[in-house]
Image: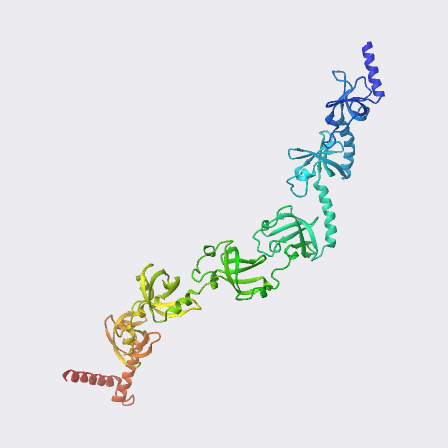
Length: 566
């Protein structure tokens, strides 16, 4: 062994004896601070240099002066320049890791400072060790701006440590959740209905808002936010907003809390029935339009409904959105009010003159009018009248001669038509018109000549399986059922008759209201049989029915011959 090797061995031994081992934390003295470098004497043959930034704590530069003692990590006793290689960061990390490993094992909270941003989260100084705080672990709910949380000391929970890789993952959220559970238990123990609390808007939905009251979430339903109508909670609230609420219901079993905001304000419906009696004329602003009507705000918190049927006298089939618009100022009249149920029925058309009443004052039933056919339906024609109202001609009132479903085909939309006013009902907003009433009913003249019990001669106009139709006069027809075609059952056959046959029938019933005449051949034969018996014998005289009827027929023929000769 040469002298140089002996010197090296002796130097290493001296270092070990002095506790100056590579990879150990040692104490040094600040010799000088030059710009961004700290020169430190650690008792070796040469001093070491440490970047000034390594002495930052929580992002704040430390104030160092010559003579200050500091702990550093000895990475190498001597580099190629003959200087000791030192690290302040590693010294702090080594010291912190020992403490943090104990805290991680016991799940104890540790103090730290958020001092920087990195991809996916933030950097935290935990007692000199740099830890990673994922964005999802910052708070219980997402936070848009974390600036207020940076550079302040606050508690964290260590989630994971890897000494070999030098990784530490911490959570602020876990600490908050633990505190939240404690707050929740305390709050549940003293919460009661009617209690006023302060909370923060946590979430907004179509049906309401969830309010965080420090460990407990309560539902603030959209109908309990304000006395006035609200379409969506976002019209009044926003995320993160602090609000005062009242506990309206608390379910001990489910721990569900229902909240209200409007309950903290005076109920505008109190005494509304006195303030807005039926018949009062008011003005208001339309706040909402639905398929069934429009809502009008009379004052903040009080809205009434104008049903679609109460918007216009004329345009009843139009959608409300075609008649009015949101924010439009309208005049209304109170039709009905129930303050206990927070309901007011309003009318708009009542603020204008009733065109039906105006028209009824100018015309009378029986007057003849002329108008344009505005619409054609299965049941009749709608004709435009003065005042932009319509009158109805039922299809049964179109023609005396044709059936209604046939007569209606003779008309088309836009035609000008004359009609007689049959009736006017202002209350039901109906005016009945008729076209056939412009002429005298031809049936009346012919109908008046036909009496019950009389015998008339008609012409067979239709033969059916269930009977025959007989034309008695030009406009009068009668249907004879199969059972009324003959006195004898074997003769009650419709096929005995043919179209155009002349037949004698007896009128058995006349109904002017239904314009119906009942006739029977059977009844006529029965009457003739009775007369024959009375004149030519009796059923006990020994003469046969054929003899009697034969004699009666002969006499009838003889009577006709004498009539012709004379």
